[in-house]
Image 1 (spheres, rainbow, N blue to C red):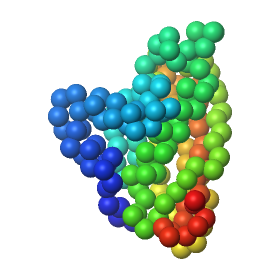
Image 2: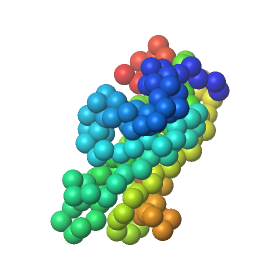
Image 3: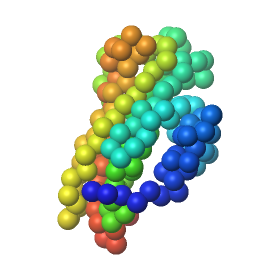
Image 4: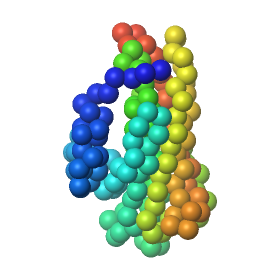
Length: 161
């Protein structure tokens, strides 16, 4: 399903080509979505059906045990899966997250990388669609898997309001 990029993705396509552009895009995303911006994640790749975002391990995202906080991981997974989904949705479809869950496999330390791949189903009526984002540590070990359930519907319907 082809999608027409909104202003956010038009900005990505312009900025990703210039030095420091992905950092600028990441800050713009954080300004547009302040809670997401609170973790300071860096969008590294974004395209139809995929996103890769990194998060530096630093004091502001840690809990008292010295590893990245569970909610920071959930936030990272949600924004990664969300950007992958939004980059894929055709203009005739809209979506909203209705459920989030996370599985934690080991302590999250070091530079973390979240990746998500999405295929959007044909949307002729309201549908729930599951998307996952895997978060790995510098060794490539899976530390967390976030699952987002999206309610997708055709624009103009009252289902996603």
